[in-house]
Image (cartoon, rainbow, N blue to C red):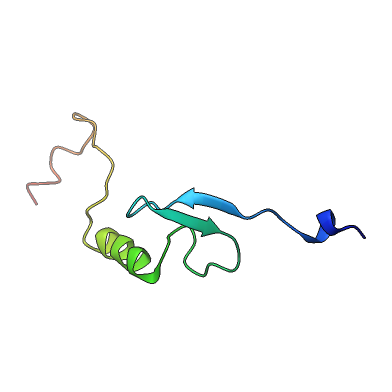
Length: 67
């Protein structure tokens, strides 16, 4: 076996939370985030429903809000 087969290049990506560099490899337990802090901040944003998709007007049930 050659060294190329056992050595995988380390991929560096942008952290979705802070924009810093993050190692995207099994050695980074927080991937794609750079740290536990960034991972927890993203989880908190999802829990607080800060992320969402825009709703197209006219496609909701008109009687839903009245109940």
